[in-house]
Length: 284
Image: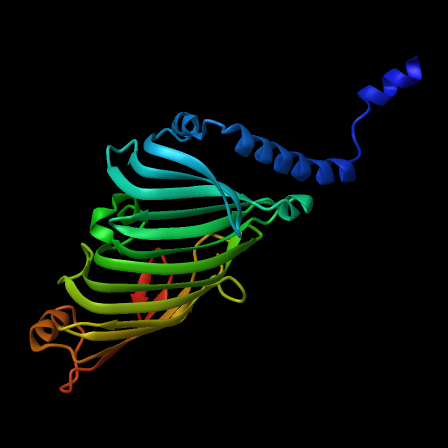
């Protein structure tokens, strides 16, 4: 009798747990599909967990190439800041069981709305990773994006990233494009109108960030940036080495730039080299 009790209280083998968990999840999902589980109740659970107000007209379970998920239609999201966003639909789900077998479960999402679209995935584990994209998002209408940026931006933004983590730092490419907008900052003498701004960054590796491409085209000036931001020093700050090349600088902008002690060539070109650190940049 003692032997049978020890069998029931003994922990299950790790290999068995990793194999049985995704199988059980798949069987439960199949059961929920046949039973017509009331998925609309999930919005109240998400509201409680994230601290945001979420309302959806209807919801249903979906099965696709990425995995099994839940689709919510006509969604209204209210953030703790009071900002309200109306979505055409939102999809969130978990990847297929094989990702759970190796203890790296994958969560995916996709959103469509009148103010742009977004999709991506997140893989959990010791070194989490993720990929995602946003398309045609009006930055000036998305306060949660504006709050993350060090500069003031308007216009339509599209971006794509595929990042891993190594030692707690991001590793991978990040690209973006801004169209028909403006760039401003309290330390800038003028607001810069932008016809198109396209950039590509490489995060991690030998440098913390390498600027592979940064090209701005606008009615008042064109600008290209290259350079790098180093990994943190012992004091936590990061050295920078950037080169800024301006062309077609408009006459009205030249006079303002020259007031800062920088001269613009007669052909409207200007090259600046910036060093120092992120917290204390300086002209070289």
